[in-house]
Amino acid sequence: MEYRNLGRSGLKVSPISLGTNAFGGRADEATSIAVVHKALDSGINLIDTADTYMGGESERIIGLALQGRRTQAVLATKGWFPMGEGPNDRGLSRKHILDAVDASLRRLQTDYIDLYQMHNWDPETPLEETLETLNDLVGSGKVRYIGCSNFAGWQFVKALGISERRGWARFISNQPEYSPANRKIERDVIPAGIAEGVGQIVYFPLAGGLFTGKYKRNEAPPEDSRAITQGERFKNRWMTDRNFTLVERMTEIAAEAGISLPHLAIAWAMAKPGITSAIVGASKVAQLADNIGACEAKLTPEVIKRVDEVSADFV
Image (cartoon, rainbow, N blue to C red; front, side, top):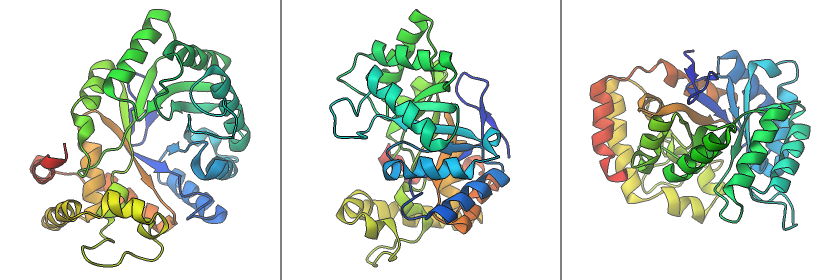
């Protein structure tokens, strides 16, 4: 496994990260722990979760999985989403961040979070309040690095400006959606990240499972798939004629390149400028084992260009 520096920091992470939003849901506790151990054994060190995943179950299970192996992992979690009914149980206020970090530490059974990320932009809280709180957490040792998720380029650049003026810890990463089926971050997020030293840890490189090949045009989806569990929301978001046409073209490119469709999609994301790591979720050990093979898929410039061309409408 070749490791990459995350943004303008010395923290080294694997080009594939383990996504854990299925833990405690589509993946039971025992399976989830086995998936974490497979990831660590394979050289994946970045494990991504959030307090909102399965109401905290994902964090709790990861805490169990990392007993005796904590130092092998770069443990990343996130806060922002509601975690209670109260008016301060959400957002990026000082109160909620401090409460959320302490709750995450308890569930994760650890003294520190390697990378704490703001899960979304909060228009109701002054950015200075959020950033000062994060700086205090870094100073306390509860958090070692900070990042954001789903921020636009101008949003994390604004945050960086405030942090640099105040001498506070700065964001080293952003976590946006990115795949051949959604290349919007190429407009401003990636250029801003490259210019400012913010690494992109991208989620949905398989476009919600479209690039696994298990969804076919005019065919019923598998019974245990997201298309079934998420219903109309998944269908409207992913199962469109436009997306299926892209999948068919990508399948042809993968066949000609002699690799699988999932490996093509993941390897393409990992090869793009500004991308540090691609998050790959897994609800089964075999599923993760297969996806890890994307690290060995060395795409030629010609293959990358062809994927760029067939997905140009998705920028």
